[in-house]
Length: 494
Ligand code: FAD
Ligand code: SF4
Image (tube, rainbow, N blue to C red):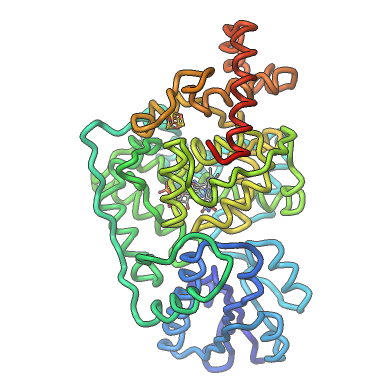
C-alpha cells in the first residue's frame, strides 16, 4: 500500500529514507518548509536559510534518484499530511513537541538509526544507577561498540585525556583557513526569502554553510586533515583573533543528519590508525560525539521537555541582559564572542560554556531566558540539544543531573584560557572597585549567595575553601560592587 514518507528538516539522510522502507515507485516523500515552526522563536537568519537550503538540495537529490517528492513551502506539515490522505511514516522526531504534533495526525514512527543507544536502553541503564554520569555512560558505549577499544581495555589504557587537553593557544597562534561553500542558485533563492522574514536574529551576510551532504563530507575531511591533530590540546583555548580554533564546526551538519555520527567517529579513528592525529585528540573528539552528544539527547528524552523547562534548582530569576542581543557591552570577552555569534551563528563549546553561559549563571539569569537566547542565536540549536546543554550543563538548574558541579568561573579562568582580557577595561583578578572584572565579582557573589546550600558542602566544596580567605570587608565590597554592576546593567552602562 502506498504511503507518505515524511522527512523533517533535520532528517536529510538517505539512511532515513531506507529505514522507512521507502519504495520509489509507490511512495510519496513529503517535505514541508513549515512557517508556523519558524514563527516559534526569533531564530538566527542563517539557521533558517541553512535548513531550507539543505532541504531543497535534499529534495533534488531524492528526485535525481527517482523518488517522487511533494515539496511544499509557506504552509504547515499538518495540512499537507491531511491533504495527501495516506498512512504517513516518519523517523521518530528528536524534538518532543513535533512528536506530539505528528502523533495527533496518526503519523507512525520508526526508530532513529543515528543513535548508538536507543532511548529505551538508556532508560534501562538509568534505572540501575542513583546519579547518571557522562563518564560511566561513555565507557559503557565504548565497551558496547568497541570504538577505541583494545579488547576489554581502552586503546592506550586511558579512557579520558581531559587533563592533557586544557592548553591556551601559544602567543604566535594563527587561525587556520576554514572551508567555505559559496551559495548556489538554490541557496540564493532561499536567502532572498529569509531576508523578508521579520523578527529573526543575527545577519544573513556571507552565508557559506555546508547545505549538501557532499559539502558536509568535505568539511569532515577538512577537519580530519587540518584540525583534528590539534583539537584535543587546544579544545578549551579561546582567542579574539580566531573564533574557531581547531574545532570541527560539524554540529550544524550532524544535527541536520547530513552526516552520521558514526562516519564522523570512523574518520577520526582512521586518522589515529594512520598516525595523522594523536590519541588524546582523537579520543577527545570521539567523546564529544559518542559521549556528550548522545548523552545530552538521552537526558532530554529521559526527563522530558516539560520537566526541563521547570528546572531552576538555583532559584535564578534575573532577566537576560539586553547586550546578549546586540553584543554591545564593555566586557571584552562578551562583546567579542556575542558579536561573532550574532554574525555567524557559532561559538565553540568553551565560549558557550565559560563565557556566554557562565556570565548568565553568575548573574543568576532565569534559565529559560538564557536557553531561549542560545536557541535563537545558534545554527545548531534544537530543543533536544540546546535545552539540556543550557539548563543543565551551563546553568546547573537541574540539581546536578547533567554535570557534577556548576561551571562557575571567575575572570581568572577567562584570562588564562584567552587573550580577551588584554584589551578589556576591567582587571580579571580584581573583585571590588571600578576596575573589577564583572565575572570575578559575580563569581564570589555566586558563592556567597549559595553559601548555605548543599553546593557549598558537596559539589563546590573546593571553591568554598577559597571563599574562607575573604574577610568581612572583602565580602561587603563584593556585594557593593555586585549592586553597582546590576545598576550599570539596568542603565545599559555595562
Ligand atoms: P566540536 O568541538 O568540534 O565537537 C564535535 C561534535 O561533538 C560537535 O559537532 C557536536 O555534535 C558534539 N558535541 C560536543 N559537545 C556536545 C554537547 N555538550 N552536546 C551535544 N553535542 C556535543 N550543541 C549543539 O549541537 N546545539 C546546541 O544548540 C548547543 N548548545 C549549547 C549550549 C551551551 C550553553 C553549551 C555549553 C553547549 C552547547 N552545545 C550545543 C554543545 C557544543 O557546544 C556544540 O555542539 C559545539 O560547540 C559545536 O561546535 P563544533 O561542531 O565545532 O564542535
Ligand atoms: Fe571578560 Fe573580565 Fe577579562 Fe574583561 S577582564 S575580558 S570582563 S574576563
